[in-house]
Image 1 (tube, rainbow over the protein chains, first blue to last red):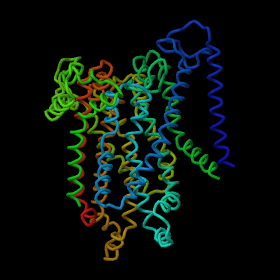
Image 2 (cartoon, helix red, strand yellow; image 1 turned 180 degrees about the horizontal axis):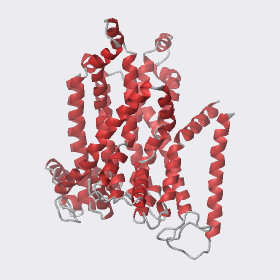
Image 3 (cartoon, rainbow over the protein chains, first blue to last red; image 1 turned 180 degrees about the vertical axis):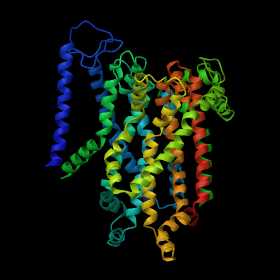
Image 4 (tube, rainbow over the protein chains, first blue to last red; image 1 turned 135 degrees about the horizontal axis):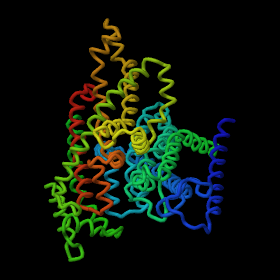
Length: 264
Length: 290
């Protein structure tokens, strides 16, 4: 019962957010722009230097954050799985060793700096941020899949299945992957804070979402100049961000449960 | 095995240096974007004036090897000088942060391994460590001003170090507990107890080094984390370190500084990684035996 109520809570929260977004948009339609106004009935979170409503901007930023997660998580999940599987499938020790060393090296590189370097070359934009995040996060995913597969491969049941005459790809897909699936899904979902943090960092630097859209990173950077004179420019963003990071375990729990129900 | 792993790392470090100048060329020829402005800013070469890809590559590579990233378009100073002076300012936050992370992290690790009650509290409050450091920076800055403390004085270094060490502290404590658990349940530990050593003696004489070796294994990750996200503390506190300069280089489209900072940091952190790996592999008898 508790598990079902978790999903319900998240659905109710999304509906509340969407309703308040619609309600808020309707409230401020046709209104004279007010710059840097403090929180009021009309502007729940106040307005920024351009007269933009902070509440609407926060919901917009939250949407972008969710879209980023929705794209990045499944892509790194599947690509990491395929690469890890291929690595483990290789029987040539030398090729495997080389590729593994390469992935180990990649994992120790400063991922954020590489992402920054590539973003400067490719150009700013949220799509580029998403593409680069996928590119830099895949190796660790692949390494996890490889390590897990290597552990499971040592089990007796694998030798038994091979003695039945089952093919290697069949064993990998039908017997090895189901064994690592839950752990791998957990691992991927546990990377949500990392993805949000990277997105926040890249947007703080102005390399992600471009105006008129908004992002938490950019809103925080804009709020810095008004740290003491217009506190509402950053306080609400900080509260939303803290709530997101605190509830990340709850969210991954819901997502995991959603997947299990879907499977059933 | 040990030498092979280090050799591979050195080989890949070489590859990284060779691949970095290929990236802008690949991006131009793949049509993803046209980073001519970056190449012009950093190498003073106009791509449109029939400069061959090979010329761009060799010039860029030469610049990387010589650590010559041109001059900053904003300050007119040599980029390498600017990066090194900024590193000095950042070190004032990073080095104490590393000490705090290891010190307090170990203390928390000891407490949670010894007392189940403290472990319970720890598990319930783990989420605090996930909160991004920028949130701590903003809140600290506001509270400092609210309480009338001059945050422009040297006090800022204490706070930046503390904020930088929040997540690393969590990593150290968690890893310490894991290592303690693994060693206490290992055959190595049981063997020494059978030999007549008490648990305390076994820890002191034989097991402490494993904790130190494990600390080495994520030292590099901690440095990379602090280096990567340092702009989250330096920008709000106004410390003119690498993070602050990097943020403002991006605002001013100062490409030589941006590219110089990125490449210099990637190489520096890779070298630190190789050094740490060498020390770790040299010290760890478990790796030697495997």
